[in-house]
Length: 140
Image (cartoon, rainbow, N blue to C red; front, side, top):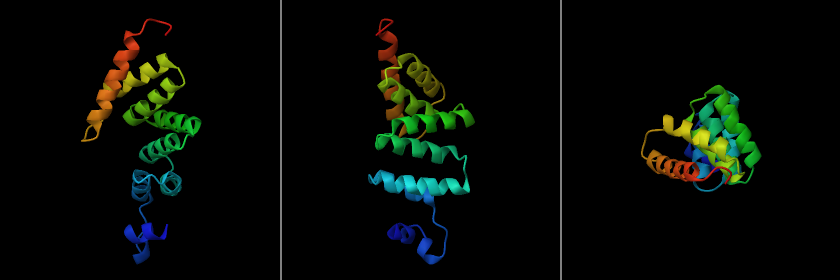
């Protein structure tokens, strides 16, 4: 992680921003390294729901879906309105065939969706998925 320390200030005596480092590592597909950075970020703030949501997303990307679901549920236990956790958990549940529970999380996500430039595509995806789920006959 030496280059990341240089990029984010560690080599010049400033504290490394592990969260920012993790986001950048995840963005370029270095998921295991990102996970390490996010875990280091949690040392300073063990209940930081933003960091926990990033960890859950990385777990999802590397196929650790049980850990991702557990982490999303931890976030929701701390902040029941965490839109990102509802969104991520909904799609993991849907992948497991738990349509009713996924539907509930999609509704919670859409009740208080995030704002920002990236949010639109997630909101549309959630709406489309919810429409598909609610138009299915019971039992499918």
